[in-house]
Length: 351
Ligand SMILES: *Cc1c(COP(=O)(O)O)cnc(C)c1O
Image (tube, rainbow, N blue to C red; front, side, top):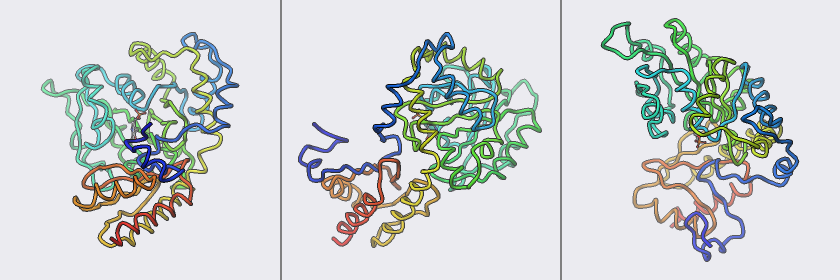
């Protein structure tokens, strides 16, 4: 057997794997699996899955929107949001590093004929009201029709302040545009800001929330917005083959995650701060400041692969991104795992 590219020998060097690549790697624990087993289900295409209905209502209420729609993934949720907001030949504006533009295989353009206008982002992933306003096209037949602004919070672990997001949304509204918020990790932002999720999402007409990241569900996202918007999204989800039947067994995980795993994100954030503080003591290792559950480090090009091998041999898995690589804390990372990771980095950097 191999795990994340580790051989048996490597994996057995430690009885506990510390996987810091992403907060998507969490596995459902006993109580979540029990919730799956006990979930009331029905045919969701007929609107009869009570657990999916409850999840959709719960997310909509949490985010202050009228309605929700359970999706297979965050990518599906963003894609359907864009297609629901924009017709062919219409345009959305987004940060050039935002997931919706950069990491979703151009879905809205490929499948919906939607045009993208990417904006440069600052080091924290922010775009400005001025940037947005300057790119909104006048009513001129040479141009696509600007329809939507896409925001992302958190972006690469950075919290976007509510006032900044509201200022961008105000520009959008003044020009008759809608706002979609990719809130894959919106709950991390809410916990870091000490604000209710609805306050973080108030800038947006629609929100995509991932259940399968820090919240710890195995599958799923929920798109929320007005009832009309969600009705259009429901047709598009069916069109794209995403109509689920007895999906309540999956929705049960989402409900369980929302009931148990929001407030505890503060532990992930504390673990991330502790990890960053410990790693910053490694001579020659550049560590960025931490805002939520992501730590970015910049090992030198010569160090990166030997470092990853040293860690892997001791049961610790990190990603191999360049020039900065990302460590992510989550539900399955304990404070003991953090201390062990700091020690293991320390051994490597002592040489
Ligand atoms: C993970 C992520 C998505 C997409 O979610 P998938 O479930 O992996 O498709 C979208 N946006 C952001 C910001 C993400 O981090």
